[in-house]
Length: 464
Image (cartoon, rainbow, N blue to C red; front, side, top):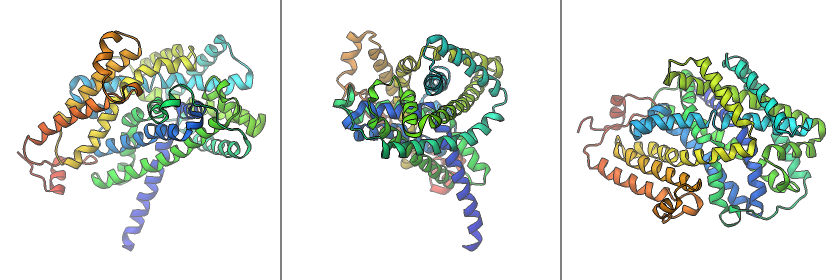
C-alpha cells in the first residue's frame, strides 16, 4: 500500500487540477448574469426555481462530462450515434450556439453592461457598438495565438473573479436587508420547471459535450489509464467543479433575490455591477467591472479558437484565420442588438438543442449499465427528441401553431416546455426492446478502451 501512495497522490492532484480547469471552462458570461435574474424573477419561489436552474445548469453539465468520459469520444463521434444527419447537424448547431450565435456575443454585451455602463455612463447603441468592435478586435488578435495570452488571463483572472464573487455574495448576505418580491411570469406558477428550462441558457451542457474531451485528454496525459479508472477520475473532477459552480449560482441567485428594486435592472450584469458598488463601494465596483471584462475576453478567445478549429476541420478549404474573421464579424453584429435581444435570439436555438442533448447524455450513460452496444435506442430516441424540439421551437415562434399545437400539446409538461420528454422516453424504450432482442451481450468500451479490453473486463460474448 505504501508503494501506491505517491501514485495515488499524483492522480489526486491531477484530478483536482482538472476540476479547476473544468470549472474555468464552465464559468463564463452566462454564469454571471442568469442566476441573479432568476433570483429577482422567482421572488418568494426562489428555492424551487434555483434548484430547477441548478439541475440543468450544474447537474446536467456534470453528467455530460461523464458521458464524454464514458465513451472517450468528442461531440462529433457522440452525435453520430443518432445517424449521419444528426451526427452532422447537431455538432454544427452546438458550436454555433456556444460561438457566434449566442455565447460569443454575450461576452461583449455582458462586458458592456458590467463596466462601460455603470463606470462610464455609456448607454447608447453607438457606444455599445463601439465597445463591441473594440472587444472583438482584441479578441481576434489574441485568438491568433489561443495558447498564449488567453491561457494566462484565464489562469489568473478566474481565481480573482471567484474571490470577488465570494466577497460580493458574503457582503450581500450580511449587508443587504431586503425581502424578496413576488414571483413573476412562469415563476409564479411553475418555479421549478421554469428554472429548469432557464438553466439551458448557461449553455454549459452543450459546452460540456464539446469540451469534455479536453478533460479526458488531460487526465490521460497525467497517467490515468483508459477504462473505468479514467471515467472515475473525470467523474470526480466534474463533481468537484459542479459543487463549486452550484455554490456560486446559489450565492448569485440569492443576491438577486434580496437586492432592493431588482426588477428595475435591465439584465443580470447591470444588477451585479450595482450590487458590487453597494457592497464594496465605488472602488470595488470598478475592480469588479474590469475583472468581468477581462474574464469575458479570455472566454471569448477560448470560444473563438474552439469554434474556428471545429469549422476549419469541417471545411478545411477555409482557413482557421478566415473562420476567426467570420465569427468575430457575426458576433459583433449580434452583440450590437443588446443583451436582452441576444437572449431572445438564442432562446429558440437553445430550446431546440437541449432535448436531443439531454437524450444523448442520458442514453450514453445508460449503455454501460445494460452492457449492450445500443443502436436503435439512440436512433429512435434522438429522432423523436429532435423532431419534437423542432415543433416546440416553431410553435414558440408562432409558426403554423394551428397545425403544430394539436400535434404536441397533449404531452404532459408541454406548457412548461417539457412535453418532449414522454415521447422521447417511449421511443427510447421501443429502441431498447429492439436492441435487446438482437442477440448476445457485448462489451461496451469505457473511457477509450478497445472493444477487446471491454469484453475481457466484463466477460461479454464477443460475437452474436
